[in-house]
Image (cartoon, rainbow, N blue to C red; front, side, top):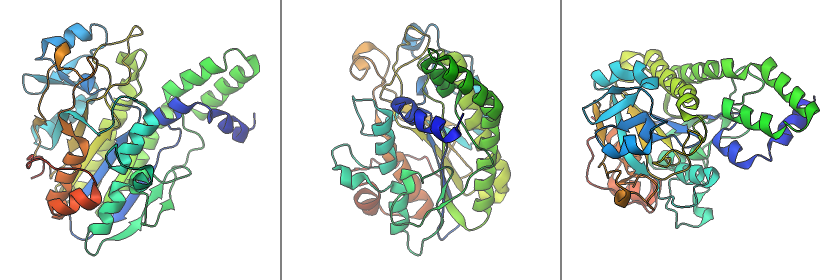
Length: 381
């Protein structure tokens, strides 16, 4: 099979392409000062209710009788999915926090493409598309005095929208020919099931490439590369992790992306070293959350409010931040989703204020146009 023809054929799978891109993207930039910011985009809509489980809310068990996995207690109300249990030493050390019931301004349509576009643009949903063509990390560089873009790295064919804009971009790729997440593989096998030739050929291609085994290797390579650059001149980094679109068999499907996320965080900590890690904030965010109730296939569908992971030596950890809205039906958004009580952009802006000393007016008018920041949230030391 011609690999180029095969890849062109994948382009028709719109939703899956956004939820599970086959090639991840990495961007880096240098700024003055010693503080570092790493942004990880969790593509596919991570289920915050499964990752940080509000077990103190009786509505959770009633809505999720077949989805909830084992979890480690955090504070008596929230528990952490055991797929992230290797991060518990960071929680104990005050280097890990979470934000719950948070979202971008995106509502209702629940499209991966639109949701990720708004997340990386960092704008309000009411702004014209032309105002969403650059990313908020690129606009951050524009307002930092003396900031220079060292490098914007793209693993694959194009840079992440979050750093798109005036900053110069270049490419970097791990030594891998083809990367497809397990959910994307399952979808493709289903699509080609009726065509014996395409089915046999695609399955053989997946097996030869060894995608499932190599996904973790890619995560390690990317995290190690970012850590190396952060020890040098780079101060801002962003990359993506895929596989979070858990419509079916979520208890099993979510474990691989969770493992990749915890591996990325732990390798960043180990690779940067105590001095650099102590000045670093890692923010892992997703385009939207998932439905409160599980569906008939043991998964969850596209929702609204979600969760964010925040790690690093510059984080005020050991806490789950954000106001909990409750899971009673009257408390849900559209009676189906977790109600957002905060804006993802506000948390990112608070981190920029703490790390780089930016004032509120600059953050609201230039970095996140349309945002109106709340009072200080105490997330950054």
